Image (cartoon, rainbow, N blue to C red; front, side, top):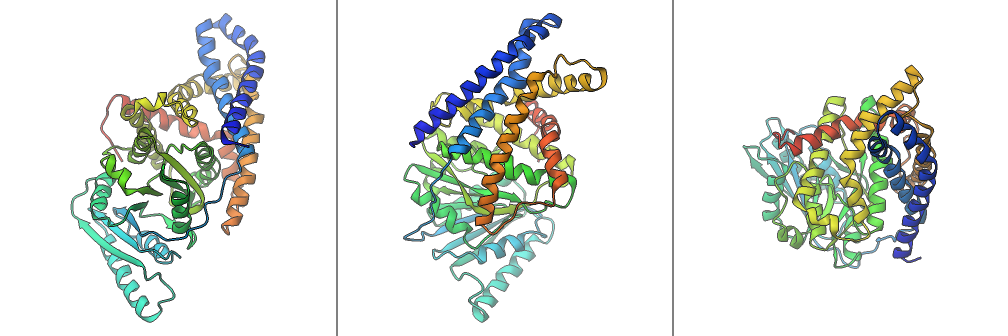
Amino acid sequence: MKLKSKFGLAILASIVWGIFTMYFGIPWIADIAIVFSLSFAWFSVIGIALIPGLAMAFINASLIMDKRKDYNGLKEHPPVSILIAAKNEEENIKYTLESILRQQYDGDIQVIILNDGSTDTTIMQVGSMIDNQKWINKTKPHLYNKNVNVKLYNYNQSVGKANRLNDGLSFAKHDFIITLDADSVLHTPKAVYNLMAHIINRGEDCAAVAGTILVDNGYKSLMTRIQQWDYIFGIASVKRIQSMYKGTLVAQGAFSVYKKSVLKELGGWPDKIGEDIVLTWGIHSLGYKVGYEANAIAFTNVPETYKHFFRQRKRWARGLIEAFKSYPKNLFAFKMHTPFVWYNFVFPYIDFTFLFIFVPGVIAALFFEWYLMASIMTLYLLPIGLISNFIMYRIQKKSMKNNLLEMPQKNKSGFFIYLLFYQLIMTPATLSGYVSELLKRKRIW
């Protein structure tokens, strides 16, 4: 089946679901209007149930039809530059570098470490790894890839990730640029190969490909247990469907590849709190496509406390607003991935209605037996949400098995909290981010 036909069927599925929910939703809207007003009723129901239901129906239909092509063959291995901006990463940077040194890739790999004013022993850790690489290449050359060349650039003053990546871009010798976070570890020796195979075989109009990010510290705390499932279900499923329609909206800095010429055309990474999302939207604005490679996997450390999780998701939410402010014309591009741009546009509205209308409605239903806002209509979202998670579970289980990984079966507590309460945990952070960016408050990492 052609991609446009799949897109049309996914749209049709969401329309059918919308008609179904509207049929049962009209009486609910009428009941709310009696107590409040008709405008408030429509405002509430659209945000709580109708738009999320349409989105999940579209995603479910797309996941069922997703038979993606494997970009797993390379006739040549073009050289690549890997940029790593590091600040106070003494505990992680050596593992990041070692995972690069073990890559099975025949092309030259230029690794550029950009120390952004670290106050710990990050510099010494990098220096030790460079010396270790030289020693192993002489004594046990089969352990490390001889094509990997690591160089450290040390800066005493911290100027932020985007500016350091731009410094690295000026040092990069090769036409393909991979970014990797200093606390991220490439899972298999084929991670770079799989990422490069995708961007080269996808076509000339593909300017970037996002890798797959999974959680490395998934059992450190309850918060990391919850996020472990978010990265498997939420983030991966969204990227999978967006890339299916040739429009991944975030090629995350944690592990992605970009064409250097396109980065230069955009002036490098923007000095934004969400530099990777703004950069990706800039790539789309130039008419290029952005892909997602499920078989190029990196593990990263996620926030272990709610405080740090709140700050991270607040930054991501600010980055979304920055992207709309920087590239508003993407709303009117009318490409197959444009519905995702529209859906992102209404995130603040959906989050607001969820936190300030639906959640109080649930509390009123549970404790005061007042069921006006937490109606039977909202229950219609549960089966479609469960279907979505079931489909994604099957897809991810197969994908992880292909990469010698298993689903985190022992993390049942995180799984149930993710299914039932994740939006409640995340929404205060995202709303705070939207407001902070709209009010132009000081950026805090």
